[in-house]
Image 1 (spheres, rainbow, N blue to C red):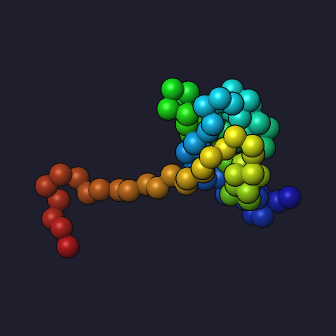
Image 2 (image 1 turned 135 degrees about the vertical axis):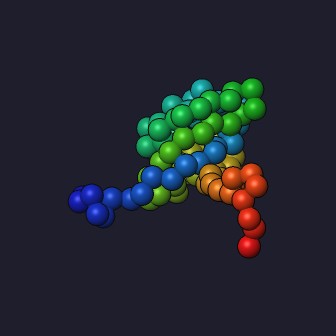
Length: 82
């Protein structure tokens, strides 16, 4: 696969079944999730994954939801508004 055809990585937040947290984290890594943060008390983890691997992540047993991260850029304080 050439770099031009490679799927772009996207940031995600994954909600996980608390009873299977450790197993789901490992399975998510196996399907390509690069874990950047784990919140086991909340049952979530964050990371990046190739866009074309999202269906594999969503299909894992114990994954309750996968949400793409959304970046919102705000102007500096005191900037004029349109």
